[in-house]
Image 1 (cartoon, rainbow over the protein chains, first blue to last red):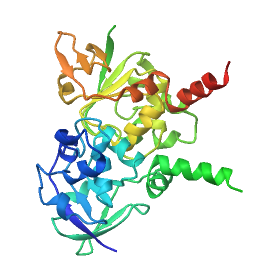
Image 2 (cartoon, each protein chain N blue to C red; image 1 turned 120 degrees about the vertical axis):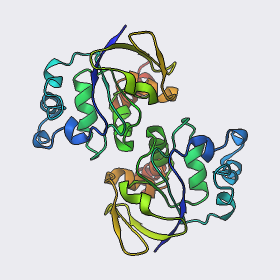
Image 3 (cartoon, chains in turn orange, blue; image 1 turned 45 degrees about the vertical axis):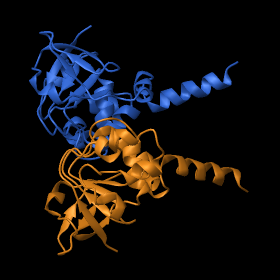
Image 4 (cartoon, rainbow over the protein chains, first blue to last red; image 1 turned 90 degrees about the vertical axis):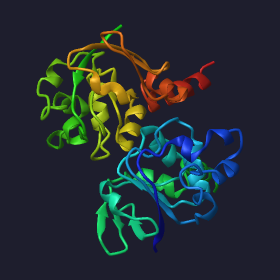
Amino acid sequence: MTHRVWRLGAQVDTDALAPGNWMQHGVDVIAQHCLEALRPDFAPNVKPGDVVVAGRDFGIGSSREQAAAALRHLGVAAVIAPSFAGLFFRNAFNLGLLLLTCPGCEAIVEGERIAFDARAGTVTRADGQVLATEPIPAFLLDMVEAGGLLPQLQRRFQERTTP
Amino acid sequence: MTHRVWRLGAQVDTDALAPGNWMQHGVDVIAQHCLEALRPDFAPNVKPGDVVVAGRDFGIGSSREQAAAALRHLGVAAVIAPSFAGLFFRNAFNLGLLLLTCPGCEAIVEGERIAFDARAGTVTRADGQVLATEPIPAFLLDMVEAGGLLPQLQRRFQERTTP
């Protein structure tokens, strides 16, 4: 299975992801304006399963959780970048958005179709080139696959209390 | 109150912080070897309350929690850097180690005495210059001040169950 690439530059900040003008609204509205200042074509056209590939320091700026929530709401399968802001990294996994730290991802281009395997730590480009991603502990990948921290906790409590 | 600065370069990785040769030991032993490849004078001389100021991408490499735990065990009051690896950022706050993202910190020098205020988002240099740090949500600062995620949860459960 391959994923269509939306290619962004370095230092995409949380205000670009969740614009301040729309922060009084819910994530469904904020998501419609996600990245509109950088890529007005993104929110109207991104499809579930697409991926964002960006430059370094993705998610810098504020700690607003809506930045990660908006990408997740739009169905983005993963964000791949050489580095992420610390708070964004924390929020994203808690909210079920997969981030792959991939120093070699700068070569990936707009519109390319790539595959990735978070557990193996690989991104495979359209031409077959394999890029390494930094390993992510299994418990965090489990959490992302469960949809984030709260869905995972809810499921665990249900398993414990259901006979 | 001021803190003595240990100045490191960019991309200090988790193997430098928690060397692979000592990973089968507890954090008390690992901490004695923290940064020994880069700064053999660090672990024997660092004092509780000292701070580490480093270059970008501090904590890259593996996801080993001992990297943050070793600094905390040595009493490091904060690590200040322009950017941190995502997993290190997550681990550090969970383990009660404060990280301050400070783009302007590259100017700070070895041995300088600085002050910081994590809630106000400032680092004050020896000459009075004030540098801004990226804001950290109050709930994360509360967690760090409580000593990390587990001590904070333990305290909350105690408060709930103690009359």
